[in-house]
Length: 305
Image (cartoon, rainbow, N blue to C red; front, side, top):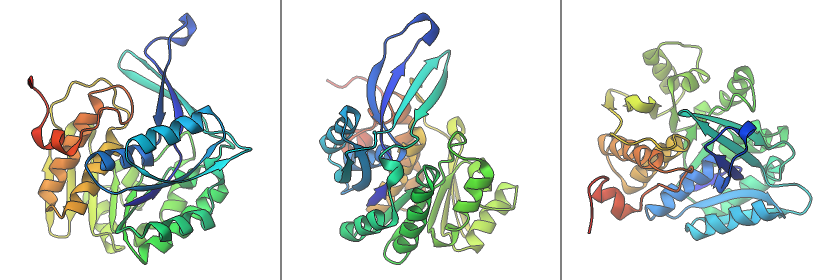
């Protein structure tokens, strides 16, 4: 699989900033989160990005490499690596970014399409975060999705970030690639960005009329659905003790892509995707709690000696 996007140094805390707090350091970013999930399940994954020549950039590279992700990453000597802060308090996570002018915001069409060609992957995962980073990223992302549609199965994870761009701007860009996507992933509000329809059934029908083969609808604690022409699978979320919900959607996508790579049917694919989401929320950090293939097949819970 091939993917592209920004990864950041992430600082996390569980207390209010106004009283002073202790931070822990992590690495985060939707496409890298999914890449780690797939690598832990034994898949070959190439992740294309840019980082700054700074400690956060070196941390991103070290962690991704340690997790078995194949890196196609440029180091920018002038721009910084993006960052985020996560403050978790009373069951709510507040996220703030330092992404403006980051190294990854300079990703362009030449870098992305060349990386895609080098990877020669069967599946290309693209997220709706990268085009929100800058006009250069938007144009490069549109170009690489067009190129990917000619050579691979394209999985589009909407992943809308309202703090990065408005719904109108997101819709204007994302609707340009719907007809190139084979699989679309998102919650219902995200999927509505891709269609003028409002009801779930009408949104799905509209996406399929544009050429989408499979629509994955994420429902958080209420599980998820996979819809293909004439077929529908629904599954409740797996019981899980939620420690940190951030990264659950990326884990879901990783599980779905893993199932596609393994040739599983839609019912089994949905079960794997939902299970990956449950693993993700059980640990602090975007991807730290994701399982290996052996752990995923064994399942969670109980005591193993």
